[in-house]
Structures are given as C-alpha cells and as structure tokens.
Amino acid sequence: MAKPKIVKFQYPQSLQEMPLGPSAAAGLLTEPNAGWRIQRPIIDHAKCSKCLLCWVLCPEGVIDKENEELEIDMNYCKGCGLCAHECPKVSITMVGEGEADGQ
Amino acid sequence: MVNKSRSSRLDFINGDEAVAYGAKLCRPQVIAVYPITPQTIVVERLAEFVANGLMNCEYVYVESEHSAMCAAMGASLVGARAFTATSSQGLAYMHEMLHYVSGSRFPIVMMNANRTLAAPWNIFGDQRDSLAQRDTGWIQVYVENGQEALDMIIQAYALAENDRVYTPVMVNLDGFVNTHTFELVEIPDQHDVDEFLPPFRSKNAIDFTNPRSFCITAATEWNTEFRYQQQEAMNNAKKVIGEVDKKFGDQFGRYYGGLVEEYRCAGAEVVLVGMGSVVGTSRIVVDRLRDLGVEVGLVKLRFYRPFPVEYFKSLSTRVKAIGVIDRDLSFGYEGAVASDVKSALCSTEVVPKVINFIAGIAGRDITKENIEEMYNRLFNLIKGGDEKELQFIGLRWES
Image (cartoon, each protein chain N blue to C red):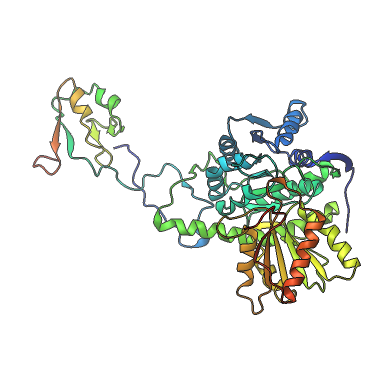
C-alpha cells in the first residue's frame, strides 16, 4: 500500500532539543486514527470492477489503487460506509468490528 | 562615549513621529496597524512613508487590532520583520494574540501609546492598558521622551531578534505627554542603523525545504517545558538588554542604562520609582531638592518585564524608604509596579518602607509639587510619622 507510514515521534530528550515555540516537523503520521470505527468496509474483489468511484469519494483518502486490487488503510478508515453505499457493483460490505469475517 | 554617527539630523517632532522614524529606520517588511488615539500619528506617518516610496514595505490595512497582531504574526511566521502599534482599547482587543505571538516566539515589535481604559471613557494617558498585559509574555519597556522612543524601537528589534531572546517587545509611550509633545530628536543615519540592526534572518520561520507545523498543541505533558523556555528567554533578556544598550550607546552615543536608570541615588535616604514621562518631571524636582541639600534620588524603571528584581534587592540596603509612583491601580490591592517592587524587597534582610502613590490617572498631571509632596511623605515616614501604604495623589475627597 502506497500510504505514508506511521513514524515514531522523537520527543525532546533535553531542553536543548526543545523546539523554539510549539512547532514540529510537518506531515508526520505519528499514530493510527481509526479508534471510533464500529464497522469496516470489506471489498469483494471478484465483484469489484475497479471503477475507482470509492477511491474518488472516500472522505479520508484511505483507499489505495497502486496494486492489482484496491486496498483500504484500516489505520485511518473511520468506517463511514460511504464507499459501500456508493459502489455501483455492490462489492463493498460493512462488517461490524470484531465480527467473524473481519479481515 | 564613541559616536560614529555619519549624518544624523535633528528634527523637531513629537513622540509618535519619533516612533515612526524609528520604525522606518528598522526597515520592517510588514506593517499591520489600526489607528487609535493617541497612537494615530504613528500610523499616518508610516502610511506616508510607504505611499511616498520611502519604505519598501507591505502596509496592511486591517479591520481591528486583533487582526493587526494576527497579520504581524503571519508576517513573522514567513520570516518578515513586522511592526505594529496600538493603544488602550486596541491593546485590550488584541490581548489574545499577544499570548499567541510570545508563546510562538515571534520577535515582533509594537509601540503602545499608554492610555487609560474605559469606562469611564477617556482618551488620555495612564499605564493601566499595558500593565494589564503583564502576563502575556511580552517584554515591556517604558520611555521618557521622544529620543528614547525612537532609540528604543531600534533597540527593541535587536533585543527581540536576539538568539537568546526571541520574544516580542512592547515599547510604551505615555499618551499625549510623550506621543504628542514636540521635542528635538536626533534621527540617526540609515547606514548606521543598518550596521547596528542587520536584516532579520528568522530561525522560527516557514522553510519549504524543511516543512514544520507551527503554533501547534503542546499537550499537558509538555506545556510546562514551553513556559519554562519563555521564562529562560526573559531571564536572558535581562543580560541582552544591557548588551544592546552598550552596543547602541557605543555607536550612537546615547546610553540608557539597561533595566533601570538611577538618577542621583548616591547617598539618598529616600527614592522614588517611576516609569515613563513622570521621570522627566521628577529629575527637575530631584535637582532642586539636591541643591537644597535634601538627600533624594530617583529610579527610572525602564523595563517592567523582565522585572529588575535583583536591582531592587540591592537597593534595600541603600535607602530607608521607597516611593513607587503607579499610573495604574489593581482595584482591591494597589498599583501593579508597587506590588512588584515590594515582592522583590520582601526577602531581603532589611526591608525599606514603601509608599505606593497612585497618580497621573487618565492624563491627570503629575506636577513638580506632587512629586515634592511624595518625597516629603517618605521623609515623614522614616522619621516615624504615620503614612498610609497606598496614597492617591491629588484626590479631591477621601473617605
């Protein structure tokens, strides 16, 4: 998946390492952000036509199209279900977190 | 004293104009200001300088003082030298942004024309506006006359942008008494100022090759460390103020003495402490009393933050009583300056007696007679006379 990787944030170890005022290197993903997701989208790749409508519509931009099959970055998917609702092939199913067929 | 000045010129200008000339000489790249009496002349002169092509500067017309400080902060964030000016209600209105600028460590310089706060509505001078900004993390300096106003705008940038400081500086002029009084002011040569104050190279600005997020959250676990840094910067400023004053004096021939200036304090039994324009009047009274053989002295408190606590500790063994003139009042206690002077003294072995004189509220004159009366009351106190700790000068009726 061609998504930014989670980087461990290096906290200052001394007063000298403190930044000048509250600032830090930009564009760092330091932790997953999907903790309130109660349902996750599961793609049935046999049905998926790769029309990429979900890729366009996903409000979080967590659908990745770099590989043969679409992939969803579960570290940042909030489980809104928009992709499942809009999929013309009905190839995406929302599955309760913790249920048997969650990947 | 080494005066290397090339072609400074004398001009008969008021305090606001002195500030405008001072700012012009510092070559700010962005000015964001909103006019308010008695600061307005600063805004007008700077607008003229820019309109006439005498300054290469982005002059931002903002809709409020809050926006003025926001715009100045944005300018500093991209590495520009930024200037603004305000007064009273305007200063109160930008209060929130004062914290933002100091906490984010942007070395902005602001002129404040000291004016009282409504209500009752009044446009004349006292220092309640800036003293109420004590905890905003800004360095505060109070000037005595137009020359010091011009010089301190230049010094303020050298101080604010110093690597060990990176803290914004507020230069305070007493409304009307300083801002509108015409004096002969020496305007330094641009080349000399350029030599003293090189172009601003911010170490706290956006850099596209090394992107950073600014003004971000510092969670509970980390917030204290940022505050400690601000306190360290203020402590560093105490030293840097003296260094900047020395360097400025060596180049321009005018030394102001750092955090405080003592005037005829040698052998003084009693001293008065004052800030701003009252110092000028007090010098005349001290001269007259000294000529009569009365042992009085004067302490010009220049910097309110950082506060010269070490100086006041050292003063405790030298004088018997200290009078603090406050052009403000913290209702329910006393004047803000007096509180700070007393707290500096309280841990010394010998604590001099202190009287807090509330005077000059909303532009009321502090006359030479008033000042002489203050000295008389201090002498009465050290002779065992009964004097209240808090006294209103020129009050019509007392309960």
